[in-house]
Image 1 (cartoon, one colour):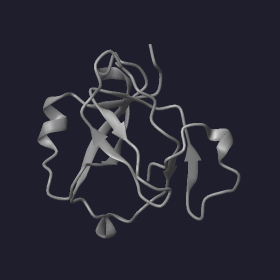
Image 2 (cartoon, rainbow, N blue to C red):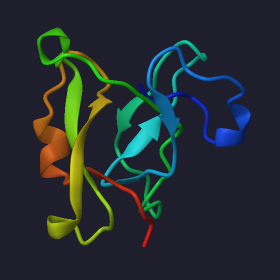
Image 3 (cartoon, helix red, strand yellow):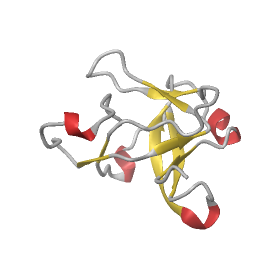
Image 4 (cartoon, one colour):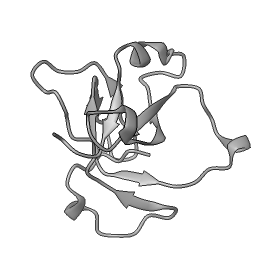
Amino acid sequence: MVTNTIEPEEITQYPENGAYIHGFFLEGAGWEFGRNPAEEGYLTDSVLKDLHPKLPVVNIYAVPFDEQIMSGIYKCPVYVTSMRGPTFVFTANLKMDSDMEDQSKWILAGVALLMADD
């Protein structure tokens, strides 16, 4: 789950499940924040001249495979650098604008998360 907090210093308590991580950058897309702290943000079209927008703090946690809800989710590849290929690490599930949206838009755009903003 991606929070609405950009700076990790703003988080004052531990999550109920998992851990908070930060330092990811989006490539090929932008991030729309939720309207309030309880609402999660979602992928949006990239903004011109903003090549690697910073992703807000992320709360990661494990979900058993049979309990995963995959509608409205983009399975986003995560790489160490923008070199991609050999720097692949894992796949993150990012929320799309609606549950009916098809992830092919983001696949064709080459959307990925990067751990380093080269």
